[in-house]
Length: 190
Picture 1 (tube, one colour):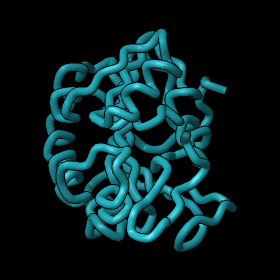
Picture 2 (cartoon, rainbow, N blue to C red):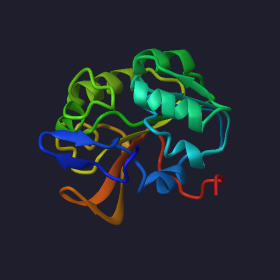
Picture 3 (cartoon, rainbow, N blue to C red):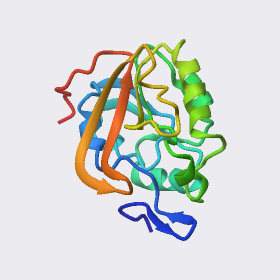
Picture 4 (cartoon, helix red, strand yellow):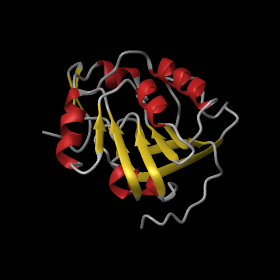
């Protein structure tokens, strides 16, 4: 069962990390596009609000992969390594929403998501890819960038923090967005 939030139970975590409380607000910054691709789709929270001719939802987690196949039967569901996914679907017409693991503890103590390196290693690999990508993109991160050494805010790209009134764990839920394009609200996905 998918829970509404991540719950600590001893040292093990239940639930699935997700963008539930910020998904609609993130989608407001994603233009209508030919190809929409999420290399770390998780449970596809943002994809629900995006308008695209083709949606590619990718996740290495068996749990997420099965969930996506059930919830998004008309879309392309993949279980590739994120690097292979980004390479396979990178075109000038592709818009990527990239939401890698933010916190080492949440992923390392939870058996549902796929996690094969530290959060910082994910972000370092992603920034290396973003230097050469053809499509436009938004990268999501913890608004405090705890486990990634402020890699997003130190980058050359535009940043925007989306906050909510919902509290979880250490405070109000929020997400840091980083993009290769200036943030423009007014998405046609409404």
